[in-house]
Length: 131
Image 1 (cartoon, rainbow, N blue to C red):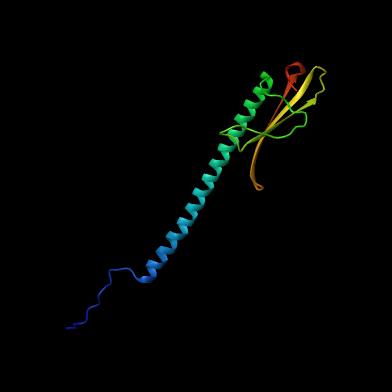
Image 2 (tube, rainbow, N blue to C red):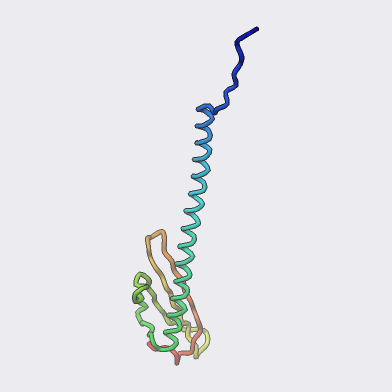
């Protein structure tokens, strides 16, 4: 009788473990990139929504007479808690004799590559605008 029996190894080799770790790390890199892109899109969407709401609110304030349109179209900061946002309004003639174009722009400049700006334009009677 032959006393040499072949024993099957029941564990993993170091090569299999290293390959498994490499696959896992590659998958985690992809997942973390997706999470980062999702967070950036969420923040961008929140900024655009805030800009649109501030723009509509500023337009309503101008039309109600509580804010005036600056003749120089200079930028004006909002009050707290929106002090990092700015607005400017300009009034321009329209093709209709009794109406003017009122344009309100709201913007925030985080960095040169990341800026948010929303512009709203309406035809308004000249009598409703405080200069």
